[in-house]
Length: 468
Ligand SMILES: [Zn+2]
Image (cartoon, rainbow, N blue to C red; front, side, top):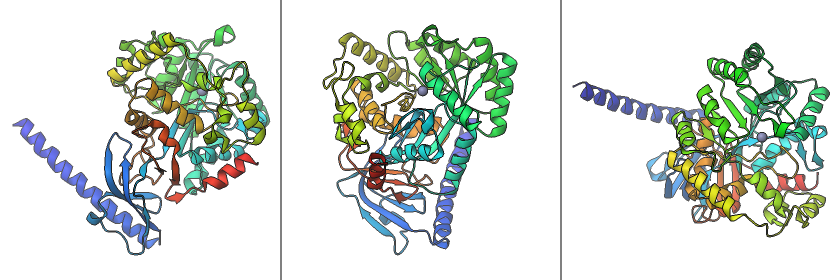
């Protein structure tokens, strides 16, 4: 009886939701028409929706910056005078999200604190747009007031750049990022007078810092749990427990950089929302994977950072498109570190594959992240495509990898309007010439990128990055 009632209530709710969605779509149409916003119908595309679904052939109606309808355009009202873009033979998917990056320090001229400016942040975000990215999460290394003002401006105006997401960084006083990076974050602090890192030396300090972050409206917190091989202190449990508890009270997700897989269980118990380094290998147990899944904690495997630095990536035309000549030459040259055919250790590959299999079996949300920009020569955007390649090599299906790069990343970064080809979502579209479900490397076959319904001038971005 009770179940029947609940069922009936459920059905009624579903009807209401359906109706509401139609009403909202209708209102959006009228609003768009009233504003004189342009409408575009993308026709006959194979659609990878971002949540694991595939539509063999469908149409997408975009008005202003939003997706209004997805399906057979015969079933919805297409405003008169809409632009039409025929995507026969092409693939449409949500633009991607990099959930672990460090913006601002890498520039076409070099890497370091001297390049950390608003202009360079925007150029980094434009590089992400060039590579088909909708948003990038900068993990705890930003001048807070600058990042806050830039993201507020991004909300007000549409620019051909990925959306800036960022976190307040916390660690033991004066510590956190790797030793070389730490010098640069300190230099940005002294030059700008803004806060980059928040030192938390005691439980009280931790709670006060979290409250300040909440008052400032910074949406995320990143903590470092790493002694950097003995050169730093590891953030103590006695400090991160109250820190995370207070952040949960303030509804601010806390993401962890953890040194070891064995650091993960206490952080899960403490209530972190995500791990920015997977630490894949024998120590990352099935129990940890299951506990992460049960607590809705995502894991960024973060594998390319070590791997790509052993490759002559400057020989890859997909990267060369945005590299100034001197950097191309340097990154294309074989050195003791960089090889055209880097060797892989079979045992390590087996361990990584087994670890990935445990994560997949546990059903934990794997999210794309690269750590691009944390050190020189790990370029924005390009590394995201390469990271997906590694995921598939280690056992993910291309569809799983694309979910990690789209809806899973959007969900865990609280970007409810990103990561899906569905009505009500932002029209951040990645259009490909070849099928990434057949070969994940086809995410490189970019025909066009749209952000907020506007086509990104990729050539202009590449030209500017190559020849700043
Ligand atoms: Zn990082």
